Image 1: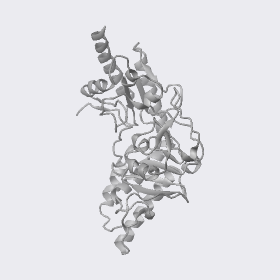
Image 2 (image 1 turned 30 degrees about the vertical axis):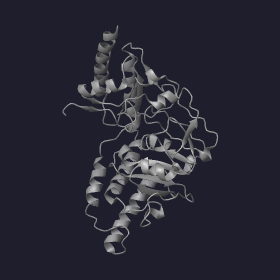
Image 3 (image 1 turned 90 degrees about the vertical axis):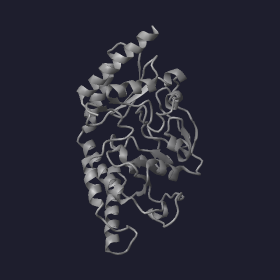
Image 4 (image 1 turned 90 degrees about the horizontal axis):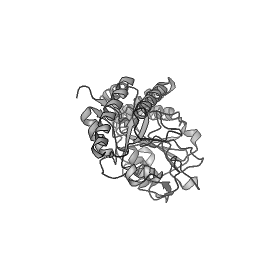
Length: 348
C-alpha cells in the first residue's frame, strides 16, 4: 500500500538486496551437499563458505554453526531435555523448554544463580532491554541482538547461541544454532546425519546462501555506524511521544536497549487497539513479539517486570530499521497522538 511505514523490524526485516542476489545465484547450484560428485561438491563448498561467513559475522570462528529451519528449531535443539532455567522475559521458543523461575527486576534485568543451567537472552524482542550475560551460560538467544549490537560469540562464554536470518535482512525459514567447539546436543531430527549429525535433512542451500549474505551485510552496517543513526531516530520518536503530554511510560529508558526498539505503555488504550488504529493510519507496529501479538492478553514480559495486567495490556512496540526516516517517525507520533486524544476524550 502506497505511503505505508513499516515499524516492526523486530518481527521481521525486509530482504536485503545482497541476500536476494545470493539466493538467486544459489538456485542454479544443482547438487545436493551430501553428494560426492562434482555437483554435490559445488553445493557443499557453497554451504561451507556460508557457514564461515556467518561464523565470522558472529565472532564465532572455530565454533560449530548448525543450520536449522529457524531460531525456534535451534532453541529446541539446544534446550530440549536439559532441565534449564530461564526468566519469563524469554521468547516462547526458549521458555517452553525451561523452568521460568528466575527473578526479573523492574528494569528487566534477570538474576542468574547457576549459568550452566540457564538460558538467557542477550536482548528482549519486546522491550529491547539488553542483559549483562554471565560467563558460562548454557544457552543465549542472540536473535534480536545479532546485527544490531557488537557480538563476539567466542567472548560471551556461552555454550550455545540462537540466531535467525530474517531478523537481519535474510530470508525466512533459515536459522542456526552456534555451539562452542566441544559442546554437543542430541539431534531432534534424525535421518541422514547432516549438520555433523545434529540436524538431519537436506540443507536449505538457497536460504543458507541468503543468510550468509545478510550476515556479512549486517556486520558491515554495524561497523559503519548505521545503527547509531537508528538509535538517534528512535530517541527522536521517544521525545516526540513524550512531548505530547500524555501519561505514558517508556519501558527500559534507564537501561541499555537495542538501538531500534521503543516500548510504550499508553494508559487507557489497549495495545491491540493501538496496533489496529495505526495500521489503518498506514503504520505497521506491534503489541508484543510477533509470535504472541495476535493473542489478546497482556505481555508476560512486562508482567515479569512488575507491571500490572492492565498496564501490560496497554503497551506497543515500535521497532525501527535503517530505512526508517525522521520524517516517518514524526508522522507516526502525530497520528498516534491524534488517535490517543480521541480515545481519552471518550472516557473523560
